[in-house]
Image (cartoon, rainbow, N blue to C red; front, side):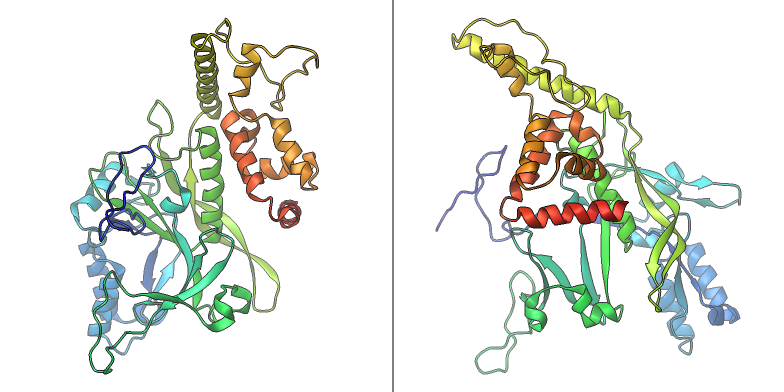
Amino acid sequence: MSNAVVHVRGSQAVLPTVLGLGPARIPVGGKIRAGIKVLTAKAADHPDALAIYERGLAAGDSFVQIERALAQALPQLKSPLVPKNVAWFTVRGQDFSNPEIAQQIMQLFGEDRGDGVRRLYRFPVVFPSDSWQTVMPHELAAWGSGEKRFWSDYSSDGRVRSCRHFAGVPYDDAGKRVIRIFGGRKTLLREYNGGLCEPEACAEYQRHECNLSGRFLFFIPGIRSISAFELHTNSFYAMNAAIQKFQTISFLRGGRISGFLDAQRTPFYLSKKLMEVPRIDAQGRSVRTAQWIIDLEAPIDVTALLRQNEDAGAAIVQAAQAVQVLQGEGSAVFVAPPAESVLGVGDAADDQAVPTVESRGAEATGTQLDKVLQQAQAYGIAPAQFQAYADQRWGRGWRLNAFGRAQVLEELQRQQNDPKGYADKIECALREAS
């Protein structure tokens, strides 16, 4: 179809281009690292290795550069650096396209907590998208020598997780000349296991060659940059906790997590929290290990966010009433929507009562809690059980907020093809939480 027009919601129609049909990507101008690397015990005993390491730290070199310098000077040392989990973040000039930005970050947000060293323990961030999948992309990936060998991907409906890899280099019919590839290397489903990504059945995952990897993409208030910054993490617990906070804030703000959180220009904050993380050891026993985990903070007054959305709901009611009056459907008094109880359900109305303009307007404020619970009950899920699950996943704010109730109902409606599977998922989640 030539000269096709693509319509983007909220914008004018745009023409597609050769380079404009791929998924939108946020450009990155620098990395903040979650930890540090230190010399192994064997390397630390070598005076030259210690000198190279300390010289690299003083110069602001990245750990990749320091490791490369060690390998060149002391090739007999194999893997001289190992990761170390610490309470602070690492900011080095060589990790930024403009090294001065690293200095600016440390000047604005670095702290000396009594040991005489200025470090980055906590800093503000704002996210450039309302989709948490965009600002916290993540995948299961197995790396080879310098490139990904396999990685996880999802089908367009989000129901099937597949395993993909790069296609082989193509040659012409004579088999002598490599064909130039436009737009990057092509990818294919992995033949093993029918292309499905199942960690429990994956040899690479069981050998610890394939692991969860993710990153946060954000801007930092006060740091002037058109490109975003990134913070990598391999922690399931950090990413899972961040998802829950993203979803809670999204419900409270009518689907938004981007930008500042309130009128006082409150940002998110990234810091670290010392947590005991459960894991299964080689003998199959459950053990706990203390680790510094990335923590996403949202230091806001939640009740203020609820009030903002209630005002938005009142505005919708009054707008609906105004339209009815202008269309000659009767007179109306512009009033706030009826008060709701703690659970979000209004007082029962007389069955014979004639619907008023006010009652019709109240319906426009959002989905009532009883409608959400009725949908859950239609799937065989007890209302109390669903409320407990929803409170655990999204926080109690979803019940008090018209936007939150609408989005919960939308999720329920997406499960209509597999209500039994959704009920099992809820039961498992509640069992794990208990």
